[in-house]
Image: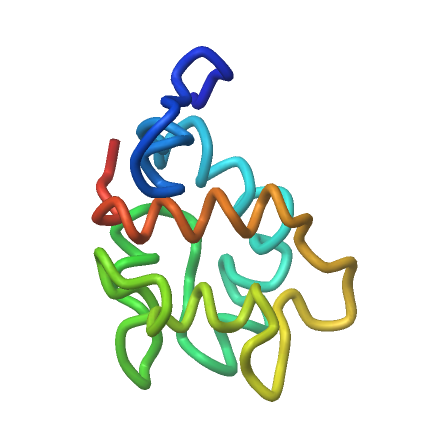
Length: 116
């Protein structure tokens, strides 16, 4: 988990926030904001094949290809969709992710999208 004392004074934004943990930082966001549609036989799984129940299924991506490009949040569809840089925004018809949540996902992908 990222703590204020972990943030450095220099380096990139990802480095300033410390190491993002999939288990403690990313997974809770996915559970709260995404699993209603992207688990089991949810609409997101049916329509795209994207299941977000585990790290492995997230990294498998959709039936159309990967959704996370480790080290590159600018082209990772996960980030493009939750940040609203596409014609659609995730989650559909629900409250948008907060800037803190999108920053965590952005930084995690830029840090290599590790299963940590």
